[in-house]
Image 1 (cartoon, rainbow, N blue to C red):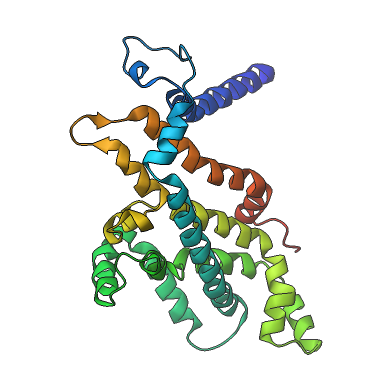
Image 2 (image 1 turned 30 degrees about the vertical axis):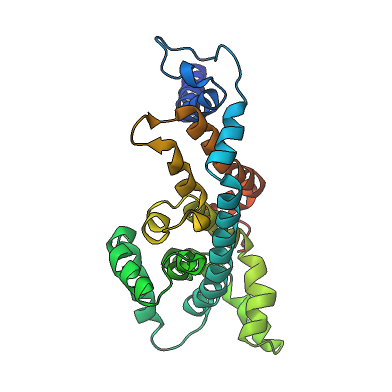
Length: 273
């Protein structure tokens, strides 16, 4: 009976994995299929022939080289600024006893309850009044800090024993050196997990670049793929899928490299009790 339950559990996991991976397989299948084969009658899991020209067409027609460069600049800039602002804020909320931290934590939690879409229009008006519309700065400015990042890193830093903080103070370390030498190394899994979240979110962000970017010179990868949506003939699915593969590949590779740290950060391990 126990063996049957174990086999059934594994079968359920295998089915769930196959269902989850099928959209990615279909994207790859469409990316290498001839354009006239996308909507042929019937369903074939394997294309009749491989058409690698879809990738060349996607790279050239969507100007993906420039879009990927813009995406890297925007994503890395946001990540660096968020780490610079979120790590000290999380440290103060987790390990520094001072008046007002409870109120600040309440404001952070309140920000988490507000959907990002609610603030899009006011943010757009503010950025436009500053004259920053249609610039890379406008793509970065609204995301220089993150309430989610502050909360996630605070929870990670709360797990660091207070005895280590007291030992650091006994050795004469100030807050900056304690943060740099003690807290950041021990909170590295949480920082890595938040970094993965940040990169995924802003690399794939479509709504804000769509609002603020008016020229193709500052288009990010998801926005650049819109060139394959033509009002007169519809979507070019083969080139669109090829472009999606190119755009998705960097974040998939990043996740594979950061997978161990990501799991540690989300599970709260690596912090000694």
